Picture 1: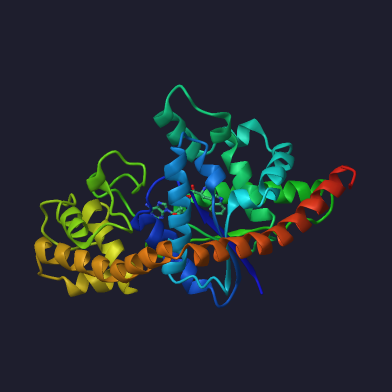
Picture 2 (picture 1 turned 120 degrees about the vertical axis):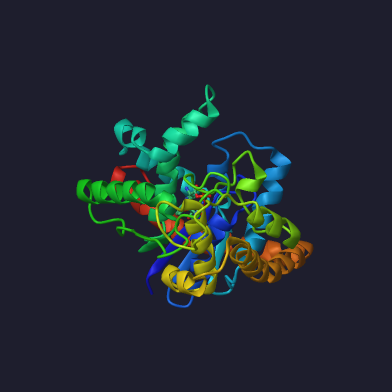
Length: 328
Ligand code: TYM
C-alpha cells in the first residue's frame, strides 16, 4: 500500500478551509492508503501559545479527525510531540537545508511580517520539521491545501539531496491537492486565504461554529453587485461561495452556476449556509461525544504514537547510521 502523511497545526480553531482543503479529502483516501495523520503541536509552538489552550485544541483536533470520518483502526492518528524522532530527524535534515531555501518560503514571509519583531528561529526552520514529518514515514502522498505546496517541494528537495549524498533512503513525496476546496478564501477579504488566525471572526467559518453563527457569517460574506452566480476572477466572493458549495456537494463549479442561473444572492447564500450546517452538525455532535470519552481518546492517540514511533524510529536509525553517528 502507498503511504499518506498529513497534519494540521493546533494553533487555532479549525476552519472550513482546513476541512474542505484537507480533512474531507483525507477521509476519502483512507481505504486505498496506509495513512498517518498527525496533530503537529510542535509546529504550533513556533508562535506563542497559551499552554492550556494548546492542550485543549490538540485533543479537539484528534476528535475532529475522527469525526471527519477517519477511522482510528484504519489510520494512524497521533500527536507529533509523542514521537520524538520528528524533532531529531528535523535537526539532521536542517544540516542539509540552505538558509536561502528557507528564506524563499512565502508562508514564512507572510507569518514573520505578522509577528513583527519576535520572529522565532523555529518559525524560520519550520519547513524542515515538516519535511521530517513527511520523510520519516516513506510517504508517497501528502494531501494538503495549495498553500502547503512550496513546503512539500522543499521536503522533496531535501529527500533527493540526502539520497544523492548517501544512498537511497527516502521516498520522494508528492503533494495531493483537491480540484475544489484547495484554497478557501476569507469571507470578508476574498483575495486572502481563509485562516484560523484572522482577526475578524466574520472572515472565517469554524468547523465547530453553531448553525446560527454559520448562517450569520455566510449571509455577511462580501460579494459584489453583479447579481449573477458565476465562477470567475472578477467575482472572488461569489466564486469562493461556489467553491465551498461545490466541494461539499461534490459538484463542479459549472454545475452550481447552472443550478443558480437567474437566482439571486440571498437564496444562493442561504443554500450555502444550509449545506455547511448539514455537513458540519453531525461532525460537531461526534466531536462533543468523543471529547467526553477521555479513555477512548487516550487509546486512539496512544496506539497511534506507538505505531508511528515504530516506523519513524526505523527511518531515523537509517539516517543516523548513514550520517556516521555511532549506534548505541
Ligand atoms: P495548517 O495547520 O495551516 O493547515 C492544515 C491544512 O489545511 C489546509 N488549509 C486550507 N485549505 C484550503 N483553504 C484554506 N483556506 C486553508 N487553510 C488551511 C492546509 O493546506 C493544510 O493542508 N505546515 C502545515 C502543517 C504540517 C503538515 C506537515 C502538513 C506540518 N507537518 C506534514 C502536511 C504534512 C500547516 O501549517 O497547515
